[in-house]
Amino acid sequence: MSRLIGLLSTICISFSVNAAEINIDMLNKQGRDRNVYSNQIAYVSAGDTVFWKSKSKGHNVEFILKNGVPDGVKKFKSKLSKDAKYTFKVPGIYAYWCTPHKAMGMIGFVVVGKDKSNLAKIKKVKFVGKSKKLAKKLIAQLEK
Ligand SMILES: [Cu+2]
Image (cartoon, rainbow, N blue to C red; front, side):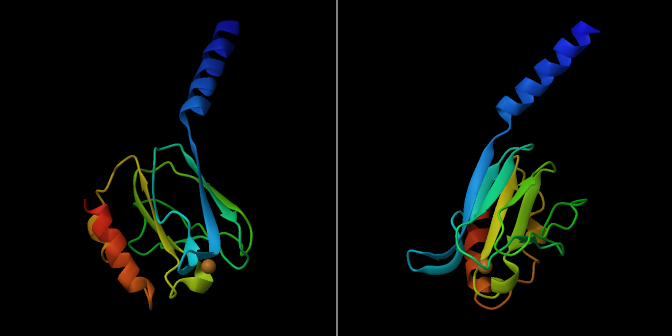
């Protein structure tokens, strides 16, 4: 029994050591950009947790479910003006936007486990307004 506990704690410790935490700020302004995530493309490993910090009010994180997430990933929509966190388990590209600013260029991507196998679907995501141009630019970066 004690061996089992020892083994389990070893597994837990190695997991917590390997799992990283990534911070992204939700901002009203960054340089010339308004309504923006501080990091528009984040590369993480499976098991990592991303924290979106509510540095300015009025923002959130909403996964774009239609074509924007790997198969099997469920809805994620955080509350406005609150910090948000999500632990990424399924590899692939995740597209998200801020619900009130989705037409104003407040979009972001998370790539999990260097897996870009759903890139063709990501290209089909219907971005709106000012986000279209930025999405093109960011997707071009994902293609590299
Ligand atoms: Cu916003």
